[in-house]
Amino acid sequence: MPEYKAPLRDIKFVMNELLNSEQHYANLEGAEDATPDMVDAIIAEGAKFCEQVLSPLNQVGDREGCTWSEASVKTPTGFKEAYQQYVEGGWPSMTADPNYGGQGLPHSLGLVMSEMVGTANWSFGMYPGLSHGATNTIEEHGTEEQKQTYLTKLISGEWTGTMCLTESHCGSDLGTLRTKAEPNADGTYAITGTKIFISAGEHDMAENIVHIVLARLPGAPEGTKGISLFIVPKNLPNEDGSSGERNAVSCGSIEHKMGIHGNATCVMNFDGAKGWLIGPENKGLNCMFTFMNTARIGTAIQGLGAAELGFQGSLAYAKDRLAMRSLSGPKNPEGIADPIIVHPDVRRMLLTQKAVAEGARALIYLTAQQADIVHSGKTEEERKAADEALGFLTPIAKAFLTEIGYEAANLGMQVFGGHGFISEWGMEQNVRDARIGMIYEGTTGIQALDLLGRKVLMTQGESLKGFTKQVHVFCKENADNEQLKEFLEPLAALNKEWGELTMKIGMTAMKNREEVGAASVDYLMYSGYAVFAYLWARMAKVALDKMVEGTSEEMFYNAKVQTARFYFKRMLPRARAHAESMLAGADSLMDMPEEAFAI
Ligand SMILES: Cc1cc2nc3c(=O)[nH]c(=O)nc-3n(C[C@H](O)[C@H](O)[C@H](O)COP(=O)(O)OP(=O)(O)OC[C@H]3O[C@@H](n4cnc5c(N)ncnc54)[C@H](O)[C@@H]3O)c2cc1C
Image (cartoon, rainbow, N blue to C red; front, side, top):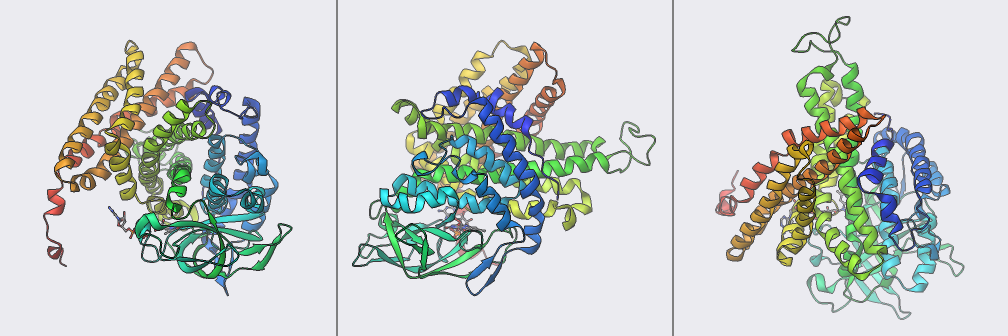
């Protein structure tokens, strides 16, 4: 497994030079503590923890996995101690509400830490990641009493959390879920049902686990309009707030799976467990939507992490491994062969990973800034605009980044040749771990329907226009910049085409709704490549400006421009194929009768 090195220079480039975080934080309500010095200190401290504590446990987690016995789960060696250190470092409280023990730092800063934790050790990062989901839910929708009881413990990290949505017959279609919630005489509810695939559902790292559970009240309407949200703790809280008597919830088993072995994926049985309603009756799914965007950006990080880790491992290997001679003559004449980094195809694989990792970082941090504004923007108008931008960017970030992050992880393995397939190097683990990113938190197919159906067509293209307008302004403002021409011309053409393609699909969808489903994944991928083109053009501009000004970091900025060039010439053409495919119509998918899918 490659030893993870937090890419601090690039993190700072995106935060400070591309997205002007200092100004962004100064514009937020209550983000006074996020001064540049403070931000640097937090990131440096976080990086140390991820490199020294979490990264060495990544392969251990994969090898040992979690073990289940009589309803309890043992996490891999070192995970429990690492979690204690994580709690002692105050990391769980970073972005939480100061009224309940949080530090109130901006969400975007929390995501930088999540990036480092997740890249160093994704399986570990899921435990606090799920707690974060539970924290957000209670923070947003809980009563004061619920906040005092649960939020304080989740924020301190003494207790962890889960999100219990999926049942054996439904994951994407939660409208059909069956778990029941029956009112008790004391105002609580008896929760009965089985949830599957619950990440961090049971473990030995914390004294209590707070489950956030979707269930139906008696007589609730069918479908998504009849789902309510409940807090169901593993151990019932005592009067003094400590963890008390065992509730009727238990882990029936854990899954044996392709990757993320260090994270327990649990079957959770609720046998009349005591639960408390959060938010209004039958509005459970609406409540969840309020923080779904943040959770999805959290998953998008998995794509970034997979690309970054693959790149770090394969770059070192490509400089070291000798094989054959460069086509243009020996580059290492003293050695028996040249290092494989001289070969064009190895460079293609390295540059793809680099373009994905750095582009993903830019997209995630940009999206996270919108989440900050939704949460702490100073005016209603700002918050509303940011909410629209966040809604538009989130499915792209989640699905596009996990798809291309997985591709990048695969390329990381490919650079190693046969050795990539062998466990010792950790590259095959990276591929296995990354694969789930395209499935949970809404599959790529579901994200694509959300983007094209809900976000774009249902707003008559308004959310898309909000974004393409920004791109248009950027192209116009820099139209006289000769150095940027190679990026701006294709970007402007793509930006125009994006709107035209949307119109075409919108028109055909009016005649046949299947056209939306038929075009959606290609539309999402096209959108991802378009957003990346905008971000890579902006990154190239920052770097070119710096080089014109004069810099002692010529190599860093030059690499940015080279990577932007690689992206435009060698990755962006993929958008063409997606454009053609999305316009190909639903017939070639739907004309085949179901019976004809015979084996
Ligand atoms: C390791 C792991 C961890 C997980 N962690 C959690 C967790 O912590 N909490 C939790 O609640 N769940 C969790 N899940 C569940 C996960 O979120 C679901 O598996 C996922 O949402 C997909 O649901 P499903 O498995 O029921 O697939 P289905 O919904 O049955 O989908 C099957 C296929 O059909 C496609 N499909 C379905 N409907 C449509 C449609 N209308 N249009 C187009 N395509 C469609 C899907 O894209 C997919 O390709 C986890 C799963 C795994 C494997």
